Length: 183
Length: 279
Image 1: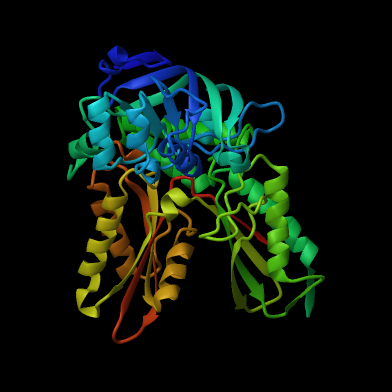
Image 2: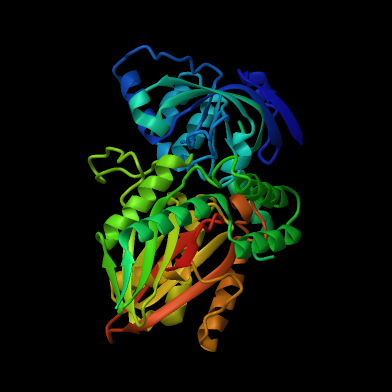
């Protein structure tokens, strides 16, 4: 099944998504990878108010290339999600609707996703040039000193995604390979 | 004795870095195309994305992948060559610096593994030098992404474990890696030597043209059977299930010690970027 989704991604919409569904996502999303996650979560643990609202928002695990002249962004494919697993439950507790990346998630992240009704989307790894075409605007939001690892607000149009783990805990990285194993 | 100027080395390394990040090698593209015809539905869509991605990158809208890698340079330097006007390593780093500053490539290198400050120009490269006969200088440049590098492994096996032990570890490595290293993969395997020799053999195995088997028919047969076993895992393109988990298995071997069976498994994502030039 294919969905057209927009942010903010409300709980009622999240519930309709099933692992393996394809989606075209439009709206604003935040970027963050290893270093930005460390800072965000440290700020949360110190009890500071974050300068961005995570309620029903989506975080894309990406460290894009700089844009070529005349372009909004350089190659912008997903990075391996598992490296930020240690931080993700904290963000989900603050109302994050879901995350976008590639690769497996830890049991702790899956449990937190179930508890908070969050969704994990996969973008095609290694398709950075293709995915960059769906980014129509990019604005530096936080931690400019982190360079490619800074937090950006991206405006995307029809970003092609796959539901990797749905709100019920179904995981395409388990279900998909099972269908093909030893065949 | 032939002289090669360091500036000429820097210039060619720059050119190779640029080409590698924009142009998927023809053999990799052909292998992805062949895999496309074997897959269906979602896994076919992944391959379609990758083929489209290669076309968009070749038009230089953006790099093939935002992880423009840590640059690995293999240099085969003829013994009758004298490099003048600077050091070989400095020249290679200068080429990398210029390419990554001028092009829209990501700077992914930090100065120290623990005290992580970005170097700002993607240097230094990792340089491997081999002296060979003659008066030429052959340089292969490979920007190595870390999604796949992180899932690579080294094992010092017991000789009694033999091929069965090797096969078991390779399959476990691919299985554990799952979707993370961006399959379909090229699996580079180094067998023998010492620990570091095995790793180097595995890395070099990644740059063997796809479709070319190990010249030793015994190893060619092992490569074929291991590829089949890896693809029976069902991990598939993007790790979402499919028939093509790897495009190729390449084994390089070297004599080793009576007490050892070193095994290195270097995983390479489908964005298998490498370019070679001869000066």
